[in-house]
Amino acid sequence: MDRFLVEGGRKLKGTVTVSGSKNACLPVLVASLLTDEPFVLHRVPDLRDVRTTLKILQALGKKVQYQNGTVTILADGALKNTLPYELVKQMRASFWVAGPLLSRFKQAVIPLPGGCALGARPVDIHLKGFERLGAACTTQQGNVVLSAQALHPAKITLRFPSVGATQNLMMCAALIPGETVLENVAKEPEIEDVSAVLRQMGAEVFSDEKGRLVVRGRSALHGVEHTVVADRIESGSYMLAAAATRGDVRVEGCVPEHNSMLLDCLQEAGVPLEIGADYVQVKPYDTPLKPLRVKTAPYPGFATDLQAPWMALMSLCNGTAEVDEDIFENRFMHAPELVRMGADIVTEKSIARITGVKKLSGAHVMASDLRGGFALLIAGLCASGVTEIERVYHIDRGYENPEGKLNALGARVTRYNPDKDDF
Ligand code: EPZ
Image (cartoon, rainbow, N blue to C red; front, side, top):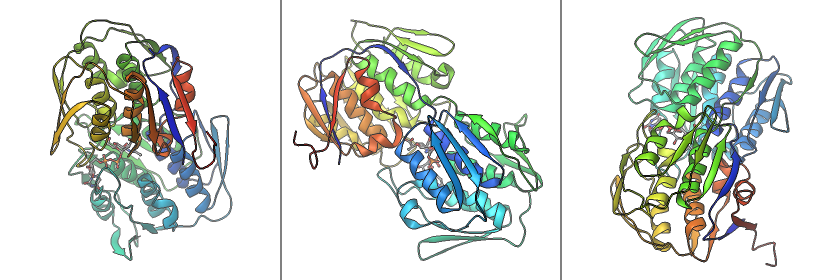
């Protein structure tokens, strides 16, 4: 399996261009199941999770092409409505196919997504929503079996603004004639990308005056051509890498307001920024980094996906910072790895206390999830000496060409595979 060797002590300088959003393109790719017409998506990042999703669409019977960031999806005979466990176990987001398959076939069999490093990650909110739309949901031998004589529009209140459940239910409702109202939905920018695609496909999707998501579905939907929104988590991750190395980096092709909470926190911590319409310039600074207390929350709160990269930055603060991870029950696996690099972090339940240190030192560490993996990259860039990061496949799930983008900014990150390379 690939590893990264990261040479530390180098300030990042230059410009990095943000790729299309992983967490927007995965549900949008799945929306192609709602139609047999051609479906074209631009600015699709070359990620493991994207390739897994394309394999899922092929397994369900779609013809898929992926070239230079553009995915073209065509009908290729009848769609299937069961998914192989092999693919589901690789990526929880594969469960998003449930909604489209249910509305198209009134029957779907989807392996329950297992837990992952972040915790149990149940799908009860998804299933409760499907039941409100008229489906019977049972679990048999590790599969979710969804079936319905007929589906009907409904008013659904989510007990928690789950991103995936919001997307799954809006895609299902888009193919149910009538008005479905979703309350207490997620407001992440990726949801807006899915709404825009469903509107282009012919459904009416809008937020009403109470902030509820209204979906007026149709009995048939058209194909689309759409460009994926910029990845706010990738852009935030590079802003944090620039700030941690006290470099001078322009993160371009992003949507700054999608990162407004992070930008506020960076400025409050003393990192100078220049914020443009589609870029953020992280500027050099030599003043101490101020410690902050942040708590992760649904958008527009502090993004849970930026918690680990933020912790890497706070490892170098002047004082004691605090992170309260309020979304996932187990999202501090990067903390002990950062401690191996000299960070001073104590975690207790959902709270991590980070007492800044003067210097981190290179060490042999292991990525346990995609965002924690990028946190280790950031720490390696700042550390003295060389850091070796194992299980880089986690990082490849959510970051397109990370070593290429970082090395273009003056980093020295080498990808190698000890099983293959006689390094
Ligand atoms: C999406 O996951 C993202 N993944 C995650 O990004 C992100 O961390 C998460 O939203 C929160 O923002 C994709 O978009 C592909 P949730 P999702 O449903 O939809 C609990 C990354 O790093 N929950 O909003 O699975 C759940 O256990 C990934 O790119 C239920 O209890 O997240 C969690 O504690 C990681 N029952 C919380 O809600 C349910 O039915 C948030 O989950 C659904 C969720």
